[in-house]
Length: 181
Figure 1 (cartoon, rainbow, N blue to C red):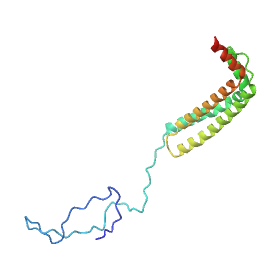
Figure 2: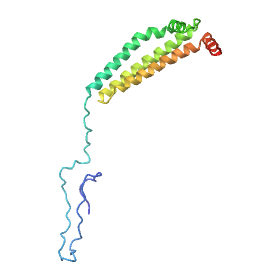
Figure 3: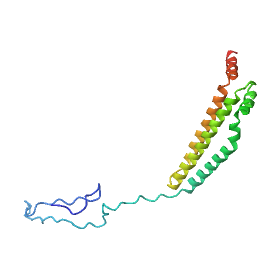
């Protein structure tokens, strides 16, 4: 016996009631079971060939607003700090002088580290904007993407500052003299 219905997916059809073969009588009552029938039309069944569309996601306006605000803060931060990070030598000299070290002389290393930090920060900002817009377009939560981008940009700036400061041999002798005391 072949079933004309499409092969069922898990949970799609309820099982048919058990049926005895035709002409078999029940031993206690002598009643005869009817012959089993094949059901050819199943109501409310979606044919297997038509794909079902996923449910439409709802746009979260709070997420769009928060993501746009965080991206705007990132753009303003990169633009405002670009010149400062590019000219990192005098900034480090002033900061270290306030801590008691007056002999910072690694201006070239600070300029190179600042240039690398600026490149990483701009690339991180562009990638953050692209990925955040993709997530917003797909109606998924996206506010976390600018936070991750800001973390990456901050780490790049901190690494640049550490490289510039630790490349100065005078600073390393100053640290050794402090440890000797």
